[in-house]
Length: 397
Image (cartoon, rainbow, N blue to C red; front, side):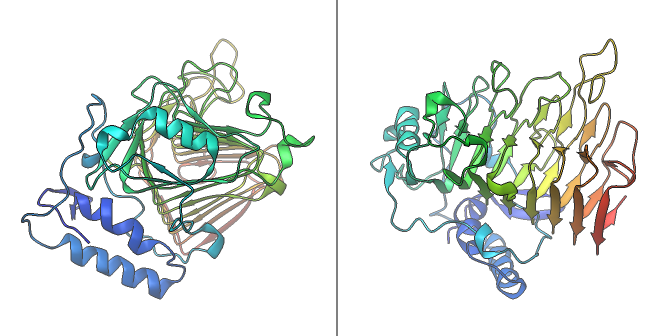
């Protein structure tokens, strides 16, 4: 594990940048119980307490003028230690199907990455020993007749939309990506996993048919996020249902959850994600299981609510999370949601099950200091009064 001589402070704690970049994803991969994960976290802290000196990871060679990923906070909630189920941990990429790059930064082009995603399989990067940012000018797209896609940045790779484009797209119902079944909204594959990556400056404002999802847009199959960070991604500013400045998801196979594990959305001022609704994530009819993650400084900036009030463009709900649909579950474990903002409803969470059959489960988590809006059943949480809720060992204020 390498420790660089550059450091920063987040939440009153001292972090070496490259400790997150090289050490944390590998340490936490496969940690599925409290004891293992506690040892992992202690190992990480020991590393990050080491002094400066030579041999550390250097600055990114990227020239993107927007977000500097090295200044962002590490992935995950530092205080989150909830055991992660086996199916939610990082995928094994020890035998990759594709390598982006030949060992030099210059070989890690946007075209090479986009081609690797189109081919599918397990994808890793070979861009040299230093952090590197790949800036796209159009999205990488998953083809539905290709193998499952696992994209592993090894803690070194940042994928950027350059403030101009969405970064990653998967849609089992898009004929341009190949229809593989006659039930595209409920099919088991592809299964897309992003892990040990940073997504910055994604922008889907120019998308009209498949809107929202500034960094990632997913429909169908399965989707999982592990040890990843999302900074300064944006989607449409206005609208009653459009959202997910970082991620938007529809129609997961058999209603199984999207897993988000040890990941950060925003995290510090100046790094939050912004959209009409769901400053961090947004979905319709989708369940989520979120473990040991951090949502902060994200914003829902629409105006007029969901549905839109007369004379308004609509939106402005779900500062961190916008979850709309019928029978679905939003489950938070070991997760911190703070300092998010809205104009209308759900400064932390907007959770609306239209047929009143959904479940909100919050365990070993903290929701605090989110601001704006009204119609609160719990602090920061907008939902129907009869919503089934399970709150265990958590702080909501």
